[in-house]
Length: 273
Image 1 (cartoon, one colour):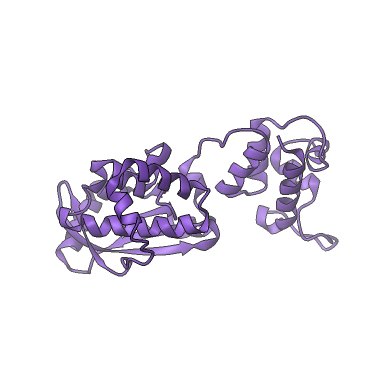
Image 2 (cartoon, one colour):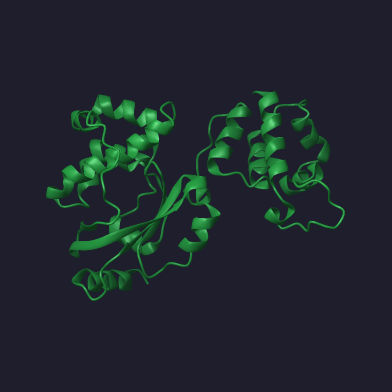
């Protein structure tokens, strides 16, 4: 446990929150822009004295339950929650995929029901899918370990390629590798670095593409081809909506109106209603 770092992190997050961020009135006499200690303590369900000792820093090591309560009270992102647990001396907690979705993307995502949509991180970890996306591509939230990341599955699990026609596989591999390189350049010692190291050892195909140093393999505006077990081949655009602050994006799949794929998607939608 790093008490000094934990204290500084918790205090900084408290001061960054506004009362309206957590549903509290600002009030005419409030001077500080952030939350008060007693407000955070109430939101976390702990005593003011206990919370104050975390910030000072002194007192006992917080339990995992206390850290979880703090994470909720301070409205931490999943990355901030992981950091909080590490500072508190605990391993990164298992993630509830759905809870990691940014508020901005969640508001848009929850309004979509007639098109396939999912939210994923910049590394290709799917956090949540709507029923139509689940019916289209399967459950991408079920994976664990490095298999959570699409690029890792692409080069290590043959079933990950079943969604795309065989002739499109070379391009897809380059796209996934280029996207990974962008994330790796931003943080080579983080998760991206772990994925790269594992793939360089596990896949000669990945190693060959990695040596190309590609970072701009155009794909977002393409009409892509997909394969479905019962509907056959589909042609769809995949439109990304980015949330840079949370390193996430929502992918919405759409067919050309009136096209054969559009009709097939309507058939698929009827099976999940």
